[in-house]
Image 1 (spheres, rainbow, N blue to C red):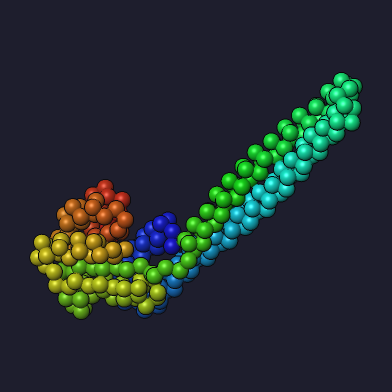
Image 2 (tube, one colour; image 1 turned 45 degrees about the horizontal axis):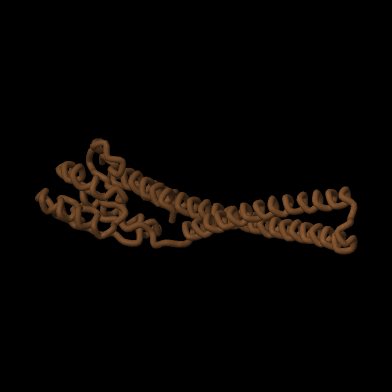
Amino acid sequence: MTKRLRSLVVVFAVFGLIAASCGDDDEGATDADTAAAQAEAEAAAAAAEAEAAEAEAAAAAAQAEAEAATARADEAAAAAAEAQAALDAAMSEAEGTVDPEVVAELEAALEAAEAEAAAAEEEAAAAAAAAAEAEEAAAAAAAAAAAEPPLRAAVVTPSAENDLAFSQSIVDALHRMEDAGLLSEVAITPGTFIVEDAGVALRNYAEEGYDLVIAHGSQYGGLLEAIAPDFPGTAFAWGTSVETFGQPNISAYTT
């Protein structure tokens, strides 16, 4: 998954959590949100595969052009060799008494053939470089389109995960995303009312490489302000708030 695609999925997941954690008891709406999330992820994967196929086609075209340029260079080199041979033969047959005009004509033909051969070699080298670059781009696109494990998410809550209220709403939302295949793992640290303990848990999750780390409590905001800058590749979400502290990797949501 490319960095751009991963970012899109993370953002989509965050806003999916916002919708899913708002206390909506409409099962139909929840199912629709899940289906929409799946469709979005599948569309993104299809786009990545199409991009990889396009890059592969471009690489094949560049390789074909490089081969054609090499063939033209070979032909030009052969023509130059023929011109040199013709000049040598004329000089040999005439035993040094060949007409100067003939010599000049043959030398001009040789010079033109050598210039054409040099230009063809430069073209072939440029085409080969372009082919190598296209091949590298195709490999990168193919790697980006290759299946990777879905995102891993972690949440820290101030109350029990089954409190039938505030904390359970976000936990249930995460599990729905896990069921939809958008998340490969959901880690939960519930009942963390002491802010210092929550800070340790949030930082640990970021250090362990979780893609999305959620601080589901208004008292946790200051923690994210301090932690998020240390992990620019991690997406953080803070509920319930609208404050992101100007950090590009923090999203805020309200319930």
